[in-house]
Image (cartoon, rainbow, N blue to C red; front, side, top):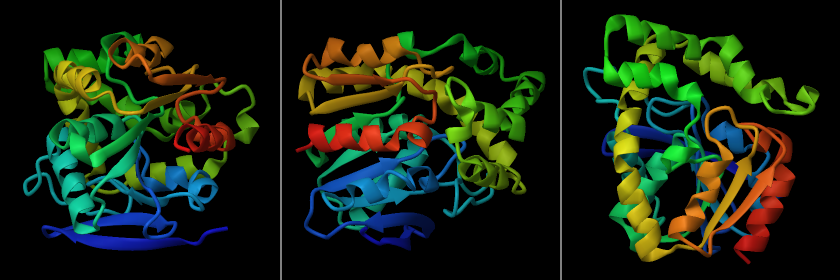
Length: 283
């Protein structure tokens, strides 16, 4: 089993933590996590791919072990998160790479692709959405905050930050919840409980509307550049629906879509199957 190294990079004064595995010179693969997790969500996937790829899995700004500066010194938007990760790839020499995107990692990675299509060799989207039909009614409380960013609507979103909701995200749609390790969700809850983390996450809920506004740009990128594209989707995801996965084929007809009988955090139950799909797809 290839060892995993735990590193930090100084990205223009911003400390970004990342996991790294595989040999330098192997095809590069960037793993981008989602809410409310961090790079540890790839703990089962990395060992299954490290013999074939040079892998980097960063914690996004404000998440995990990466810096979470006060909101007054860093504006928590998806544009800023993407620019920080873009600079990380430059700092560590990831000049051309495949990108695995999940949840928040999708609008982050798709922004990188739109800005620098020449750097993207392939895309794997695991429940990483770019189409309106992929958004479920579970987004309605957040949509209400977009329409009216009142204190009452912001307060209502705190329900998404509770330990109970984190566990629900991990286990909803999973046929056998005993297969879901408590480790990842408990670590997520630890990070969410840090002072100030709640306000950071509420800011990002509010800014998620910027991702919806960029869907046409993302779709134009898919149509124009047609990167090798694999969607691996937990079909029982309560937030990102299967039609969102199928929609990738509308703009990129050669996209490959594979569904798994699991929920949002598909790697918790299907890491082996997803790794096999990636190895077959990128061979």
